[in-house]
Image (tube, rainbow, N blue to C red; front, side):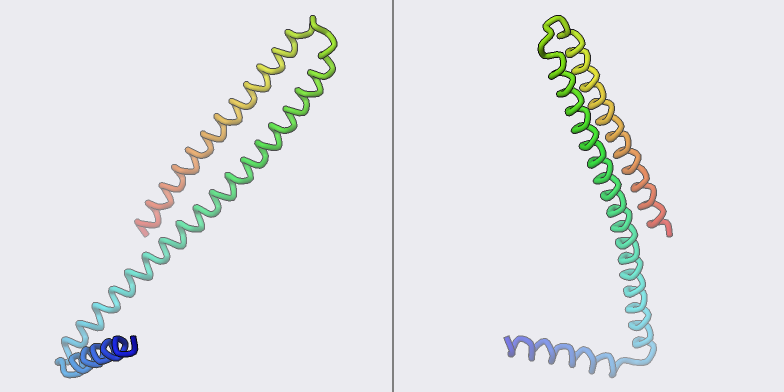
Length: 136
């Protein structure tokens, strides 16, 4: 491994010597090329940073939405359970229980639909941000 590193060091020294022996205009051209490469890498890193922040924010928003939806579902399930307990003794009241089940299911579907719409909106916003970053 030491020999391998020494060989790489020798290769780098050879490259340095080769650059020292080059005419000044070639050195300048190499410096400009390296500066351009550095600028491109910095731009790519900045773009990556912006996208990461955007995705992090989007993730946090979705996690908060999911938590609130789960909390709402738990609350609705608890309400439904209490209602069913109250109506359990009355066999005639089975129709309202079915109705409350339907309401509960509809609320769940509405929440899922709104979450899907939110996700679509966030994905579109993320796509637009990526385009803006690419443009910049």
